[in-house]
Figure 1: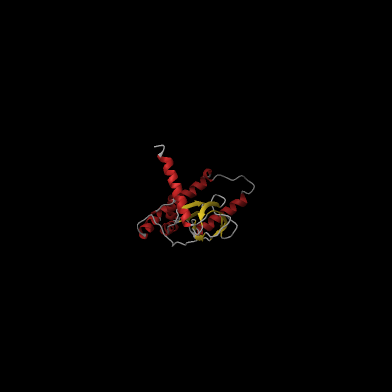
Figure 2: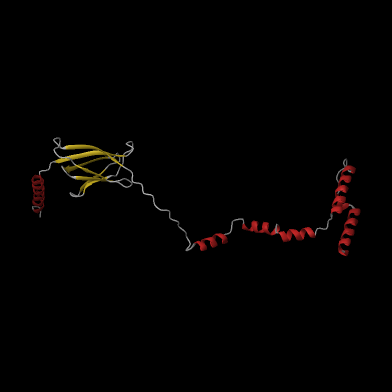
Length: 208
């Protein structure tokens, strides 16, 4: 088993050498840096490969790459969000190396607008929105109840006061303010005349 592995390795190296020798193509070291179209930002993670030979590499975080290639190889530069670039390795390279600056153009695709609803239909969505209750829904319901036109109308017609009574009350308050302007205010609950007037007003309302 130990003898078989070296033999297989030697056979593979010999086969590769014979294949390259028969093709007559020189192996060169292909290196370079990949930039964006604006020439100011590098692109890491770009895939660089030869579809025919099955060889390839990717750019490092600085946009740099290095890989062996044959003269005449078709190289493809591919990255997400950028258009592909095809490049053919030129022949008759005496230095056996090639340095290249590659510029990729952004490939922007605008998708159509998609509306996502958690309900099977628009009618169901509207019904759910109308049925939703706010955090202060109880206060709003109370407010709507008190400002209801029928309730306000009922309260207005059931008021015991009249324009004449309101005027008399206002004039009485003005007169009391002038009389007791230098005295401490009196408590009407302790005034027997005030109680008598209150009882008479109750009797009048009862008779009506």
